[in-house]
Amino acid sequence: MTYTQTSDPTIRECVQSWQKLDVDQQLALFWFIYQEMGGSVTPAAPGASTVSPEIAEGLFNQVKGLSQEQQLQIQRDLINKADTQIGREYGSLSDTTKLLFWYRLSQGMDSNVIIPAPADYHLTSQAETLLNKIKELSFEQQMNLFRDYVSPMGAEPKAGAEI
Image (cartoon, rainbow, N blue to C red; front, side, top):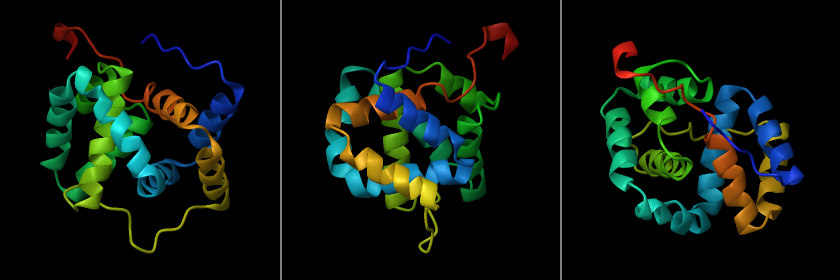
């Protein structure tokens, strides 16, 4: 998978800090970002409508149709780059469509069709510090950060005979 990270050292540092968190903290951080900044992220993720929102929606619907435990496992598998069918499908998406997919998952969590974060869940101090740092970034930096974070997730797509 060809992946080019942004050259902004602040964004790279944030992505690396995010990736160092355990998987559930990474997911929680995504949820808290959506809760706090969803209004500003909203116009950018659906800006993916110039790509193929139906692709992100199709993958979202696959996840939505599963049990909550399976939904959570799929999100963990994407972060861990597990070689699963959904991971390979995700891996074949454009960066913008990946962002849109995670945005749809956050909306699904909001409406309880995707397993929500526990109501009493708290970020670790490292995740909280990172959340505060992300809030201070410009909108463009935030979008580059989110793109750099979601881009390498998932598994390498495979040729038809290898699936």
